[in-house]
Image 1 (cartoon, one colour):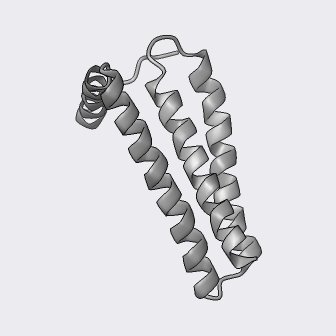
Image 2: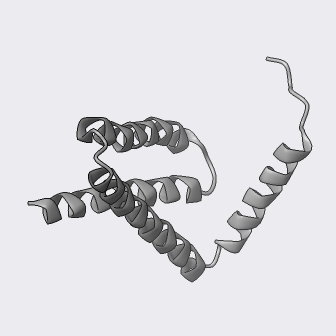
Length: 112
């Protein structure tokens, strides 16, 4: 397969990811980053369900979006498991999935 040219954006993103991996070597920093992602995804899950219920948007269509996002994350997770090296991306993805699902479930229990 031919090697594609590295653009300035790709180089910047790669550099930012490398910097994040070096920063997250400390276990407390890694844990704080994971908790921030978990709480951010929880907030997105609660906000998404609150906005769709108050706006009168069709609830089955509104439920399809988070289910689709979680399914895409599961499929992306399979490729991240196979990679060698630091598993920070896999851990961040798992925290985002858990937070989103937990936020949606908590809003569902509030409706009952």
